[in-house]
Length: 305
View 1 (cartoon, rainbow, N blue to C red):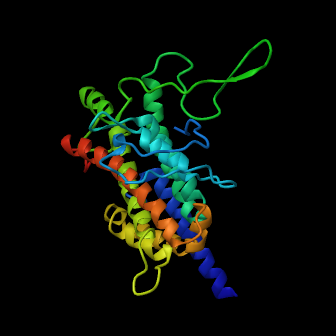
View 2 (cartoon, rainbow, N blue to C red):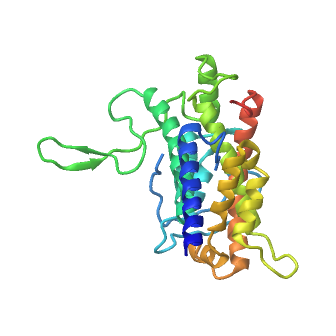
View 3 (spheres, helix red, strand yellow):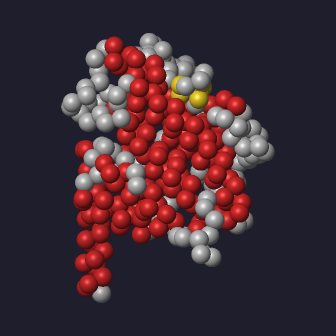
């Protein structure tokens, strides 16, 4: 028992240290892994051309999954709303997508959900920058925002406004911060662009993990989610992390739930249904990721310190 207690204590210390590193160093040097969204409940979702080239031949019909906090249908609705014009991404639905992805990570257990605190800190940075560019006291972002009548005490929900022109989209934010010399290409800053890059890297990790989770069996067996998540991490975020953070991440992946948990989380019965659903989600995430990648690459922002 003494050995087990010492091992458990060592793991706890490592994970607590990792959490501290996330908070003080950010996702770029530690674990890079989502506006708490406007509600879109129980509506049929069809993939359209605005989400990318011919996403699927048969558009999915996704409904609310009863009893679950994370909802694939809500995630998809936000992701579909993010692409605009031909090459841009709206920040409000982009951040709302992250809100739903945070719920996804939280559902995977306390070890993995440590990352959601850091993700939320990054989305908060962009929201605060957007708020600073807004005029008026009602420029709030996020869910459950109410205004109270001083005479009656009645609470009325405020509508989540659009971002200002500066922070309306990925490209408008890039233009604005470059014009105002907010982005530093040599030193760390809390610019929206630098913060977005950390979220962008994390999105690639999640995209790859979901893609691998949708894979067919290899040699007659399905690989464990733990193995798949570790593999996705090693080819993405691990490249930006220190040795200590990589080791701590490996410990967190050990606690990943088994595949049956994901069937329940996504309201599917088997691997075939899971694959169909996740492949559609991955394609939509890919469209948002690719647009963001192009915008940042065109402005030399893929290696911001």
